Image: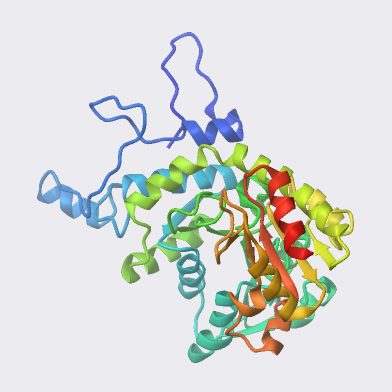
Length: 402
């Protein structure tokens, strides 16, 4: 799917040279006979065949066409094509949620007896897959500490198949050197999978650093307004083929309506994320100077342990801040109860600023030991900075911290 341009006999624009924003806006389906400007919704569970031969050739994949929306749909195809262009990926598949993307990617590629090496700081549900569900199928996971990348190779075994990380991490906002991971994966012939949810393809493209697959929860900044769920995996065409075949049989497909919403959202991703990042840096600087805050982690604060790495691989710092409030879990609860403007929600990447206390909410089902294993302390607070007037957000945080 190429970005739309008008036909001109004297000069043809090179669509491959279009900028990020142009690709996001102009990559769209071919117009129908109605010549609509905005791509319509294709709310159809299935698609018709011209004759018996067309049906046969379609099911044997001699023809590339839509058959059933669990396999593909025009709206999901447009969304996936946009993400592929943004990430520099060969192919992709869209899922109903971010966790459906994570699970299906691993399940399609792993066999009983395989081994995963992962950063220890991962999303709670991903941790549950690694520790609770995959072991049932004789798939083991070893964790390396995000701040000790020099130890990664010591965890690699003969049966290791996948190297996995989030960067920045959820909820600790740690950053890992993607180029280092790419080199390790290449050296040991591993599949490198990166969850790029916090950065979005606008700020960071892990494939440039050697990632084979990139996963997104599109529910977050890609949608950006807290409306729909979605996920996507993009990358190497042969690996995506395996994920596609697994997924067309197990059924985690993204709905056409959600795909349509998400594709529209990508048109404004760059301008939204620019403002998110601008606001987040101001909030992070405020928090760093507050006496009731022990520490602040934001990738583009100079105090961040991986600041130089973040500057190397990210365009800006993103919209997520993690800070340690003085007083532990009780102080965290008091802070949340004092919030007036910001939202208390489990989501991130919304237009509305959201504050969460992971130890008592999103990661509360983990033991304190497991929480610490994924970088969550009792006083950790995560802020997803939105698009409100930033002075109002700071004023709310200030009064809640008093």
